[in-house]
Structures are given as structure tokens and as C-alpha cells.
Image 1: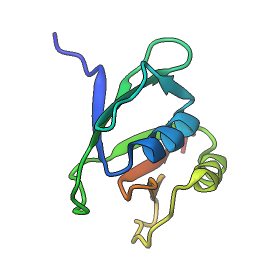
Image 2: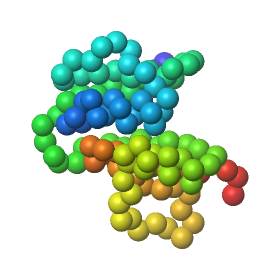
Image 3: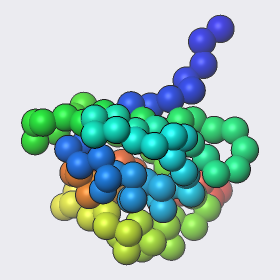
Length: 116
């Protein structure tokens, strides 16, 4: 059986990605990064590894992550304080998510896990 154990995220600025995503997810470097690649892992426990691969294009990558929270408003505010931005977005009337961009412009969503 296959299991997802890592996501590779294309970024232009590896140090900025390390800083933002380490704080956003409470992750740490697995080992010292090089100029083209870095790996983050959870500080505690098991979880999906997040790797960064340096890219040179500004074109949007065709990927995004969904992050789940039972306090999405607080998480969105925290992520914005870390450097995320909130783009203009057309949400459905009953949307249970908020779209954000990381400092490199990659889209990700914060999903509300509270019962509806």
C-alpha cells in the first residue's frame, strides 16, 4: 500500500519558505538545507515531511495544501502575521475555507473542521 509521506513545494526563496512554514506548522529542519533543497519535519510526533525545491519561474505551481483547524479565524490571523497574504477570492455562500498565499505566492487553504 502506498502512503503519502512528503510533499515537495516549489519555491523561489528557500530561506523564506523555511522561516514561514516552520512557524506555520511547528516544523523543524531535518538537516541543514542546501541552496536548492530543504526538508522540514514535525517537531513532535509523526507527520508528513514538507520539502522545498528551488524553482526559477514566477509562474504559479499547480498544487496547494489544505490545512485543517477548529479555530480557522485565529489561524488565518496568525498565518498572515507570519507573512501569508489573503488574495481576492470568490467564496461560495457556505464556504468552510479561506484561501491564503505563502510568501512565495503558493496558494493554500485553511479549512474549518468544526461541525456545521
